[in-house]
Amino acid sequence: MRIGFIGLGIMGKPMVRNLIKAGHEVLVFDVIQSNIDDVVKDGATACESSKAVAEACSLMITMLPNSPHVKTVVMGEKGILEGAKPDTIIVDMSSIAPQASQEIYKACAKKGVKMIDAPVSGGEPKAIDGSLSIMVGGDKEVFDQVYDILMVMGASAVHCGEIGAGNTTKLANQVIVALNIAAVSEAFMLSTKAGVDPIKVFNAIKGGLAGSTVMNAKIPMITEGNFKPGFKIDLHIKDLNNAIETGHQVGAPLPLTASVMEMLQTLRADGCGQDDHSGIAKYYEKIAGAVIRK
Picture (spheres, rainbow, N blue to C red):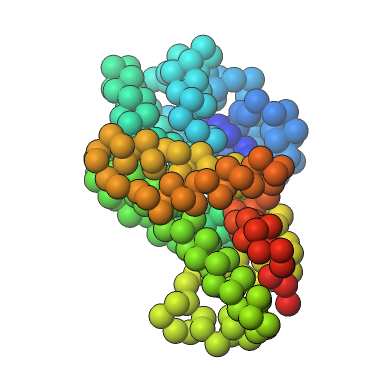
């Protein structure tokens, strides 16, 4: 199948590679030429704009940083809607505000273009091995049409409700992940300051109720001092900002999320915005005057 793909960052590039490996023809565009060059080497075809990709493809996938980027790519000059034919399907796999998904959906509907929001969880490692968790909002019929394509990139794809439901689900996921990393960092700083080996603590508790996928993924990174980004602090700030704004709009209290947001903002101010979000541990290391290392 011929598929258009816009957005070739940390997540987009491996997702494109998996589509190519599955035998699909993938046409791509990104504002950074080196990103385009990277996937062209793997068999993708470069186009000069989002509009040009849409003119050639009836299925479009977008994987972009935030709401304004998706609006520009879909609705802006030389954007997807300028080139898309009626019944084109847009699968927005970016993590953006649910309200933005709804706004973009309405603009697409006026042009006869179908859209679903399908953000992902799993970070770069799961994008590489094609085992992302995909959360989808929009028409169930459209979800069913693209399900097999989604499963090339993911281990699961769940229809969560109407348009915006995918991104609401993703915001819930990001709240849980951020709070979990903070809880892990706090607990392991306690063990470190008390003189107990953090690796032994990890091995002792990971099989119990406190065990989690987050702890399994992040404690090895923290104890090795490896903060190479799989998911950047700056991007988690973006997600928590969308969560807090959505919470305000719907009347959902998010006091713990707001506390972790302040930790992340402190880390950004310290120049750590491009670190992996496991770098939340650095906040505790800074205020405790100790490092969590094996």
